[in-house]
Length: 313
Ligand SMILES: Nc1ncnc2c1ncn2[C@@H]1O[C@H](COP(=O)(O)OP(=O)(O)OP(=O)(O)O)[C@@H](O)[C@H]1O
Ligand SMILES: [Mg+2]
Image 1: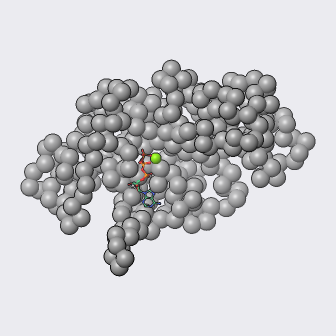
Image 2: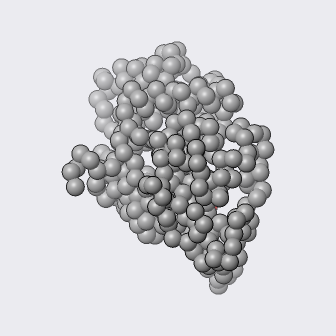
């Protein structure tokens, strides 16, 4: 394969199981990520959508090597990083977390928070200040913020600092794990616009994790819909938004208006307990169109380049 054409990130058949101890002698495994594959090209945004507990953050942690998969591999520019992300490549992949109140060290001033990754990656001392100042300005905050502590900032300003820290080493890939969920709706939009501008200016690729379909729809080129760790549907953003095919995607995209206050609550309350002996489609319990065939697992169907996990599409 021509190396210039290979995807920036390729996730192949990734599976992660967590050990759940049920009693003194009994052990059980819970599959948080189930045979997940996707690709991301340079400069593109992949939106990872699914309700709470569907495995979105686990996929982010696997890519960052914070946890190890049970099966599958992760290729970055064709290099296998599944179990050994080198320090040099680690520099190219960064993360923005949901809640900047907990992701920024409260005892550090903003200057120190931004300087820290530069120190870790041996950027010479005489270059650091310029980089810190340039970066804080690029997230639309002025230099006076550098002398403040995180608690002296608003939620939106703190998230701008978290973004500044994520971009300070010029990453090629950012995993943004619900970066706007903790913010007011108007501030969410500002942060989305900022991320979009940075993506375009710096050609950064994103994995954008969110429940918020408005956000995913605005930024993503490609969408992966997850349910119980399994991909239900994946494809080009416009195909999925204009014509969702999987019944779960339809529920996510049609039944609840974006920003509806009950949105998160509803999707959590309709989660159900699994019958562990059931070996059919993972979506069976919730599916509005289930039939007897669904007691066996479907195969992925390729429909005009889109993959859908359902017997009836
Ligand atoms: N260390 C762990 N041990 C056991 N189970 C875990 C562990 N970490 C996550 N899980 C489980 O794996 C599943 C997926 O978790 P994950 O955090 O990836 O979900 P998510 O899609 O990011 O959810 P949310 O939208 O709430 O952030 C959940 O059911 C969670 O309880
Ligand atoms: Mg999460």
